[in-house]
Image 1 (tube, rainbow, N blue to C red):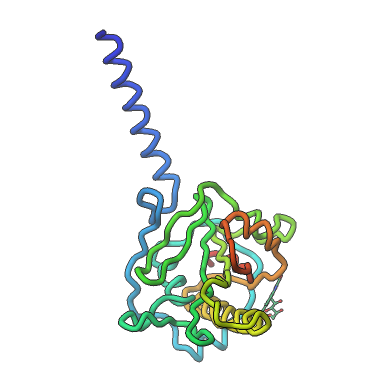
Image 2 (image 1 turned 180 degrees about the vertical axis):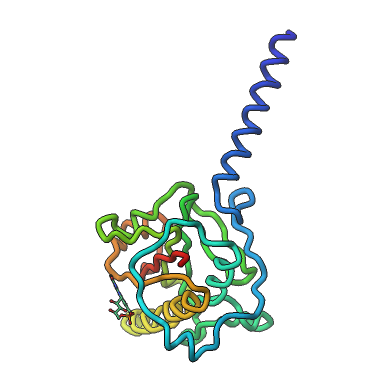
Length: 218
Ligand SMILES: Cc1cc2nc3c(=O)[nH]c(=O)nc-3n(C[C@H](O)[C@H](O)[C@H](O)COP(=O)(O)O)c2cc1C
C-alpha cells in the first residue's frame, strides 16, 4: 500500500513538472491554452512616416515576438477602437465585421477575439508551414491569416459578398502593414496559400481564407 502511495505521488509530480515545461515552451504570453494580450497603449510612429516606410519584407528573424507587439498588432489589424459601439480599426461594408484574424504560432493556432481583445487557442501544434510553404523561405515566428466569415454577410448577394469581403480584407491587411512598420516588424501579404488546407485546420464552415501575413521582429 505504501509503495502504491509513493508511486502515485511520484507520477503526479512528474505530470505537474511536464505541464510547467510545456507552458514555458509556449510563448511568454500563454496562460493555459489561450494567450493573454496586454492592454494597448498609445505610441507608435507618426502616420506619414509609417506610410513613407511601408513595404513588403520576405525575410524573417526566428526570435519570438514580444507580447506587447502581438497585442498592438492584433488591435491595429482589426481591434475595437470604439468599444461602446463595438466598432473596429478597419471599416467593413455595412459594418459586417466579417474579417477574422487567426494567429499561427509554434504553440498552436489561435483566434483573435476583438470584443475582449483576447486570443483563444483553437488547435495545438505548429501549423505555420501549412500556411506559408517552406519553399518560399519565409519562415516567420508568427503568421496571421485573414478569413472572411460569411455567416456575418448573410444579407449580401454572393457576388457582392465576395467583392466586399475582398475590400474589407484589404483594410485589415494594410493595418497590419502599417503597424508592422511602426513596431519595427517585417511582413508581407501572401495570397499564394492553400486555402482548403487552412480552412480545414481552422474548421471553417462558411467563409473564405483570404490572405496570410507572416510577421517577424527586426
Ligand atoms: C493581395 C496581395 C497578395 C500578395 N501575394 C503575395 C504572394 O503570394 N507572395 C509574395 O511574395 N508577395 C505577395 N504580395 C506582395 C506584393 O508582391 C507586394 O505588395 C508588391 O510587390 C509591392 O511591394 P511593396 O508591398 O513593398 O510595396 C501580395 C500583395 C497583395 C496586396
